[in-house]
Length: 353
Image (cartoon, rainbow, N blue to C red; front, side):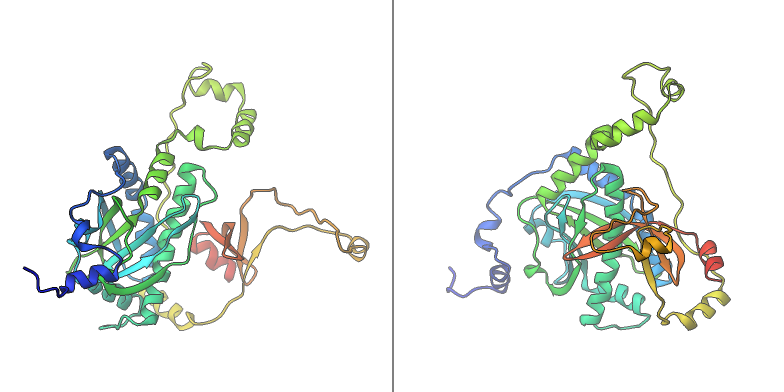
């Protein structure tokens, strides 16, 4: 018989807003079919190469991410897989597929990763380390959103700025019901393997799986389909299936090489001397040429037509040299640019020279 005192597990559960006496017995809300699980897992698997490349560039070390293995699971079952202390990085989707989205890693993995980012051993998980981890996760999420936009045609997908915190696992803010958890393996160049998880709330997982499973033609805006069909000649249509109307074309996804720079040790040593030098970065929406008399005649309300079409990517320049292209997004109340194309390192070095 209980003496009325709360156990540590019950205290932790109350702090997390969970009733430990009922949660184990109550069935988990929501669901998640095996088809949805496979759809999301296959999509995430297609992004690990890009994520590995991005993290390798950020750390200047080889980082390899593999997996993931995805499953629908409830809070109690998931917490049983975790150590006592974990680092939680919230990166909820604010639009497109709005809802809960976060990453979670054991404290030891967070220390190793933050230490690799800062080139520091035995790093403390202070505010600076949390900021570094949040920045890395922001890069991963950005790559994932770009892939989601490409595959679903949904251009409104955006996330909140990642926020990282190291907390006891019992107070981790996990979604309710059966959420989707993807377990990744991460190799940081040491003998010890590391694991981390990506978690989608039940509603987010269902929406993403539905959009990914939809035919590509259904995800394409109606106007875009009409423009594409208008641009196709009869010869092109005949090549896509003998000219039979309504015949489905066999469309294959384009595979791009990883954007990993290959520098010699001497080059890496030289460039490290200027890594903390500030450079001017600008985003160019477009350009035009005007006569002086036209410029002098400008006033409030004057409309200036640029040389770019609506929807074209904007140019990202460093010291007036083109390094990348991207699309305009809105973050809170500020404009931002999501990078969609990187100019090759060799071209960038020649431009800067």
